[in-house]
Length: 329
Image (tube, rainbow, N blue to C red; front, side, top):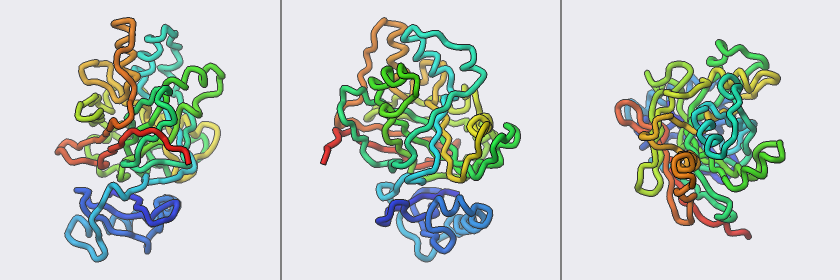
């Protein structure tokens, strides 16, 4: 099942079920007005939403419209919790090696995670607005899960049952603000502006055999303009699976329905598959050439992300964003 949130003039939009080919959609206000509403009452809503999805698959449905990703908000335009992890430790190791920093052994045994800005999530085709291009604008391709209500202290082997939906995302990062923020010892804030999410969120069954109940074994395709920047496999070197990330996030507190947990930058050790962020390429350049040669994003550039299933079907729709200077009112 594929779900999306369309603009309707409200903060949280209106929930729709989307056909598997991403061409048609139907509002389901009689089941739930919003995505958050469906997640809050998932046990009742999910089978009814699945029934609508089956009817869409079978043919035309009364009230359906053409699905326009340009009118889609983030599936959860604002969420109670946006927690981003760094499950691809290869990415962390490269970036730290490039700047001559040690790699603590604990990075391989315990997940890293921080709280992002979940109150202002961007739709898949919303522009990336940069206050100042000297801040070093970068993109990061990730997979995210959306959870139901997760009890505090949940065991890793029980955590998978709380996964409701999957999305892909572009975790925009202002790289030149990162060092000073981390030096304060309090984590990211200004260096992590608004995050853009895929046009649709999907239930685990849409991933078919690519989902092994812990990782998604499909390439994350990242495009910079018309150039393929990378297509690392999201399942290959994800050191901490989603069950571990849920258990880690819920170690000392519960997670409410609608919590988003990101995988971190999808990354493989093999340099020939490219990368899903500029920082990783710059790190490899620093290690090899002693200088970073690839520039951060400039005004007018476009970035795109998508993930295709084994049959070539676009699972989540395409994140397609243009970079521009923010105009302050």
